[in-house]
Each structure stands twice: as C-alpha cells, then as structure tokens.
Image (cartoon, rainbow, N blue to C red):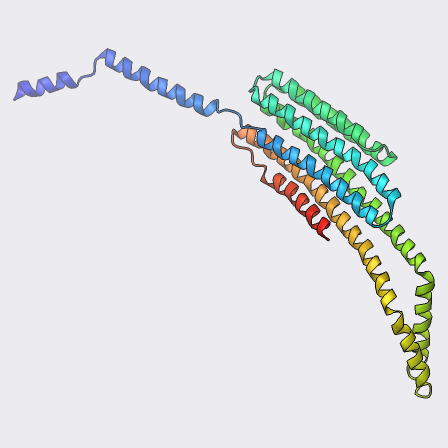
Length: 320
C-alpha cells in the first residue's frame, strides 16, 4: 500500500520542463488577451460618411424647395437671391462631405501617431478654408469669421502637435464644432429673406385689391351706422346685401393671402429643419470621435433621421 502511495507522489510531482511549458502557455494567452484589449481595431467611419452625404443632398433639395415657395409668393427677385445665397450653403455641405471622406481615409490607415495627427490637422484646415469661402461676405459674417478663424487656427495647431490619432481628433473636434456653428448661424439668416419676401408679397396683394378692400370697409362702416337704427331698416338691409355680394371676391383674396403665408410657413419649416441638420451633424461628429477613442461602432442615427426628416418635409410641401 505504501509503495502505491509513493508512486502516486512521484507521478503527481511536476517536473521543471512541465512548469516551464505551462508558464510559457499562460504568458502567451495573457499577451494575446492584452493585445486584443489594447489594439482593438478602429471603428468604420463609413456610416458617418454616408450620413454626411445624405445630409448634403437633403440641403440641396431643401434649397430648391424653398426657392419654389418664394416663387409661389410671386417674388422672383428674392427667389434668385435665395438661390445665390443657398449656393454657399451647398458648398459648405460639400466641404463637410469631403472632410468626412478624408477622415475615413485617415482612420482606415490606423493610428500612426504624429503622422496621423498631421493628416487630421491638414484635413480640418482644408475644411475651414472651404467653409470660409462658402460663407457670405457681409460685415457681420466677416467679424464673426475673424474671431472664429483665430480659434479654429489655434485648435488645428494643437491637433497637429498631438502624438496620437485619437488625441488629434479630440483637439480637432473643437475646431470642427466652431465651423459647424458658423454654418448653423449662416442658415438661420435665410429666414430673413423669407420674411422679407412674404411681407413684399402680401403688400403687393393688398395693393392689387386696394379699391375692393376700401369698398368693403366703407360698406362695413355704413352697416354699423344703421345697425341699431330701427327707422332705417331698409338702409341696413341694403348695405348688408351689398357687403354679402362682395364675399366671393373677398374669399379669393383670403385664399391668395393664405397661399402666400403657407409658402412662408413651408419655407421656414425647411430652413429650420436644415439648421437642425447642421446641429445633428455637429453632434454626430463628436459622437464619432468618442467612438474612435472607445473603439466602438459609430452611431449616426440622429443625423440620418434629420436628413430623412427634411426629405419627408419636402414631400409634404410639394403635396400642398
């Protein structure tokens, strides 16, 4: 029995070679696990590029739709002005799309430290230059651009000095956010063109019906004059009938007025949606940077939904 126990002890005792082999295997597994955790692949930027392209096309479609609404107001002059102004917005979104493409190429190349940081900085610099050319040259815009340009330039320099792709992107995001803010402010200015066009269209309508509206006003005053005059009921009836006879033409006037105001509401809704789209792009960019840092998939649902919302709004406007 004792000999059997001793034999078990000898068999169970690990040899040096066995320990060494097991240790090497354990370390190999550990290094693989560390490699998997620390060197996870960068996320695909493709969805962000696609969403930016959809946003760009939505803005182009919105520009055409708003111009159509201005022409419905009978204001060809402001429609031409808006087309010219919207061309700048289209160029701005073209620049965003080109930037997203360059970003995809940089991220796809992997983290190459200072080299990646340099490319990120160059990409943002090109975006800033393209958007600056796209923005109109009003005095207010120039003043804003000067301050914004200083900030963007500083952030680009900080991004260029980064030692990694992730840090460069984080620093560059501040510059990109400033650029996106400029696009948003620029889009909101379009509302002024619409309001001015609406005012001009309504004034023109009122002028064309001025004699008729004056006549209706006089009839109302006469009717009020005899409203409580029991002696002159015949006069009251006379003016009531005359006023009633103007109702069909007055309804035409009201319909034309409502058509002008409907075009204003449609145009403003499109501009609001376009401005919201710029905000969503800005948020999506920050989300993209976070996704790259954390090595997780990019979520651009809100940006895609905003682009779809514009297209749906355009469809509804065309059906009115």
